[in-house]
Image (cartoon, rainbow, N blue to C red):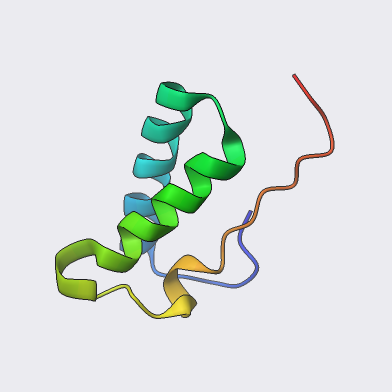
Length: 64
């Protein structure tokens, strides 16, 4: 989930990378962290501000 409103483009990039990572490694927290790192470095850091990548958190109270 996101904690505040964020750009649609940044969300698209982060979520695409998150799900790619999640399917590859199966670890939700690591997948999100790696996706955030990817977004921070994307195209010379245009989304490096925490306003773009720190907005996303995982609520993980249940195991599937």
